[in-house]
Length: 348
Ligand SMILES: [Zn+2]
Image 1 (cartoon, rainbow, N blue to C red):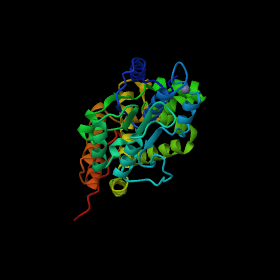
Image 2 (image 1 turned 90 degrees about the vertical axis):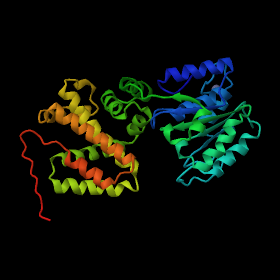
Image 3 (image 1 turned 30 degrees about the vertical axis):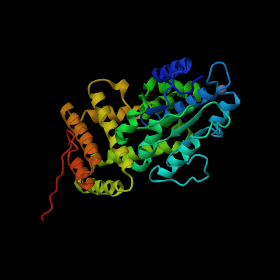
Image 4 (image 1 turned 90 degrees about the horizontal axis):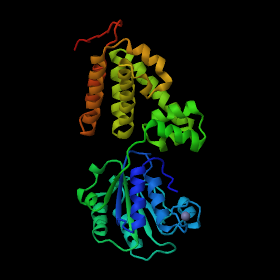
């Protein structure tokens, strides 16, 4: 049984290829973080090496070894792993040495299974040399060897690498699908499952992690509280916050983008409340606050600010000056009806 939740289109395609013996020698799984790419890749590795009549069974010795990362013919390379090496130090990129080791291993016949499977986790982190080196292998398929590249953004991969792989897209799941999986598969109580499902944006892996670690949800709450404080703050405080985010940006771009996404969620929720679609909001635990707050803005103000947040995210991706981008965003926060905006311009 395939363990990946949802993704029926991709699973049935792989199942069909397995039954026909028509597998590609390389796959590229594209989808947001925590959507299930690694689960699917490991499931495929199991299906290729399973001993049961209907693979993947998840229970035979090869399937279990693959689940626990102990199958000699299934290797994962990424920023924190290095095939069979004991080295686990995080890296800045996937190096050419890692790819060469993988190629050497691929040139040897399977050790204990039928197929050798190499999973490249975070393929967009391949260094240029590593990607070029991998390309040679992808151009000359080796029998009984399958490569599975996992990536969130294929635009960061060389087009030559993408074109050598069969591309499979894993879209985010519906919130109801995540919610059902959390309650039935992980025993999460319904109210929490509903909230986590909404916050996960269809990425079940995130919801499962957040269910197991309260810290993730707490962090989310704190960050959102801070953003809500900023809406009511004066310009001095908003600019101080912009400077704080900009200072973080050089070390942790992903974190700043996450904050922007959090804000985007909030303002989209305001928009949904404004047009009466309260059932589809993300921050379901704060619906009363959203309803109250939505009264203070008109539809145009909300739409314009959503555009501003999106534009800021795009400008940051294009390497604009982070402080300038974030300060401009702070200036674009719309004023609430009934609240006097205090703009103090200090003399130069
Ligand atoms: Zn099995």
